[in-house]
Length: 120
Image: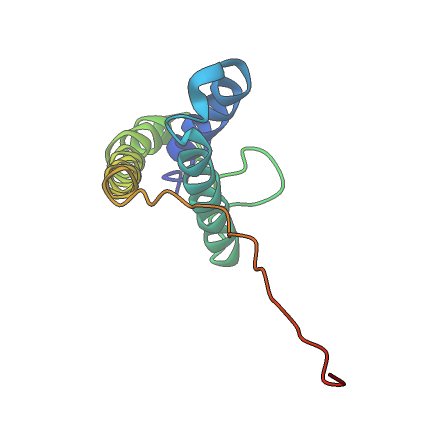
């Protein structure tokens, strides 16, 4: 129903933080933003494919009456929150792995060749 809303909102907030915070590059915040927004986009497409999201208000087919609001909020908190925590956990694992395996690239050395003339 609305499980994609939580990672979508978190992704948008993180995108704004990434633009405003100078230390975002150091913690690779862009990876988390792409994971959140990409996952939310795939979920929106999947929900639209199954007819759970429509282009007219209230946009969610499960929210046809005001009595359905607690059900939608419950799904956003439980399922969307769990997905957001899981994606953040994956990002932390990737971040710690890249910190451990950080390979310093050295620029290639200049290749010096000596060519002799064949006519001597």
